[in-house]
Length: 295
Image (cartoon, rainbow, N blue to C red):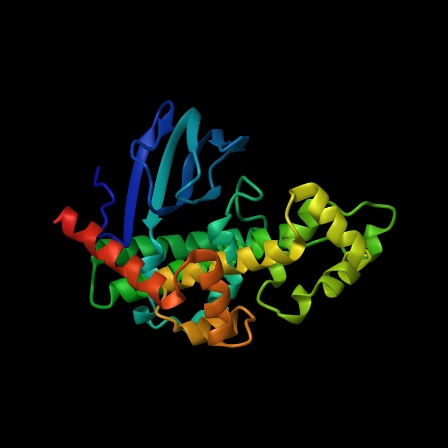
């Protein structure tokens, strides 16, 4: 079976298993796993999920997972890195696409299990799956571009299904229910790109709390201030975009709600002891060195 290498951006593996299956290598890539037939249990991080034919799983590089198989199972793995979505691939409205899928692709198992809950979406993704396999096998002109766009569409559909399950309860359904730390974190992940919605007063209003009460509760539960957590989460997304896209520092500052490039640079350097441009240069050099080692 072909192994995923540093030069690969996309690889398909299809195989059958009769008993336990676990990835042999440490992963540096994402996987979309399609269960074509069979049933059993999927162990993902600390969760155990039953699986059946037709289920789809999204696995991040840091996830630990394996399958205990009850009935012979046919797996189809799509393995890919973020490089598949390089801006050189000319995805339409890349910034908007990143807004939709970024927190999902970094935290796909906030809600573990089959990632598609809507029947119509599941049917659509399996149709796209078939088209991707065909493009991959035929390898005709522009097939990499076509696969990139179809995987992008697949992730967008996965994102809307997971986001639907992660949406905070409405204000009306919140009566007589206490806000949890998960409510706050989910709100931040959903609205991190909107500067106004990231103000403490706006978060408190959305969660039916006072600003002081929200700040005190967050500090008690996490040991961190809400303001500092939001900054660090934004900087995490900044690093992701510097490493995996060709956006300029100015563009990233605008996308993530910083006043301007100088504001982002000042905050970034405070916590990372280097500027965003220096960070990007460093990461590009590391990637080039890794590719050279595999040649």
